[in-house]
Length: 146
Image (cartoon, rainbow, N blue to C red; front, top):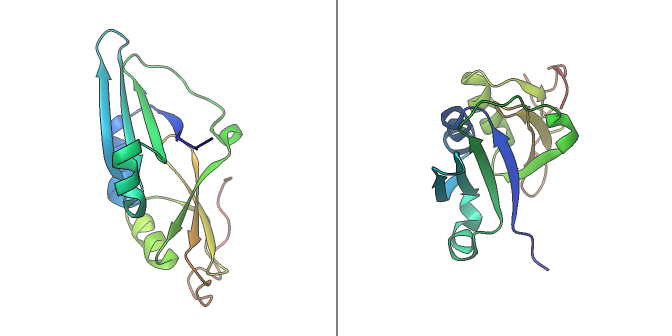
C-alpha cells in the first residue's frame, strides 16, 4: 500500500494557490479541468518530494475546486496537513506579513499552526532540531482554533 494524496475542497482556487504555492512553497504537479463535471483538480507537492510526485503523483495534496458555489463546513473535523520546514520562524514571519494569522505560534521553536483560506489547519514543524525560543513568538498567545 502507498499513500497517494489528501484532497481538500477549496472555495477560491486563486487564493488557495497563493497560500499553498506562493506562501508555503508547494509546487503544482498536475491540473485537470472537467467541463462536464464542472470542477478543477490541482495536485501540489512539496519541493523536496517534487521528483517523486512528478513520476507517481504522490505524495500530493489535491485541491478540488467545484465551479458551482457550495458551502463547506467541518474543516476542523478534517484534522490537519503537516509540513516539515527549513526555518519555522522565517516562514511564520512571511505568512504573518501577508495577513495569515498564526493560530498557534512557534513558541517552542518546533511547531506552529496556521489555516488555509478554506479553514484547513496546517501544522508547520521545524526540520531537525527545534530552534531556540525567541521573541516575538515566545510571548505571542494562541489565536482562534487549529
